[in-house]
Image (tube, rainbow over all chains, first blue to last red; front, top):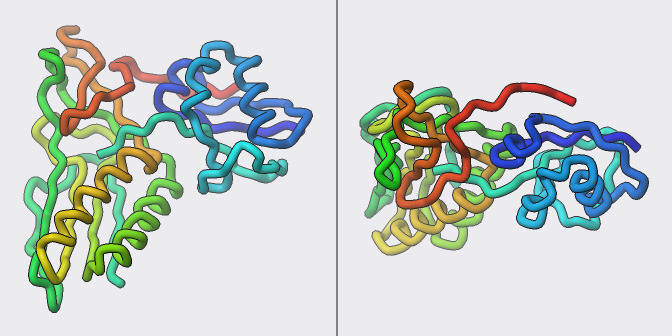
Length: 80
Length: 155
């Protein structure tokens, strides 16, 4: 399944991308995280501290994804 | 329950408009202001990026949680998106409560949660002369972004 992942902040800067398309076999956030690390090595050291948001809500790594999900990688935020 | 959340472009008004809430014994207003430098390096301001609608949703969720926990009367939160120059207001939190203590506690807790869970990022903008670098902060917190702008490439 192919999914798109929105990137922000330090993760967007490391990847040089605002959005990345990823092909995943297992449809979980954990599998997506592993694939992101493989596809974009510069992201790998940041992923441990990142969370995924699916359809604008934080989810756990075992969350199953579907093709229509809006997926965002949320690293350390810095509002305020 | 009275919760108002707003994310808007550019700096917030320098002064908050007068506000009160029926039954309130305390009305608090916290303004977050962009500092002119960090670690001795000058900046001209911060560029804020928000992931919407999640940012608004998270701010609303946090406000609702604190509303019940601290028995508040009203919360108004505003946050900037885009460029905010140093000395300008980028974050304003107003809380009305019956008593002082719960309002102050909620104000502190809300801001802590904002900095942990709300998808808003800031990037320091260095002076055009090239002086300074891309590290700056607000309220003593570090900023993880750098001064250079990201492109909008998509893969």
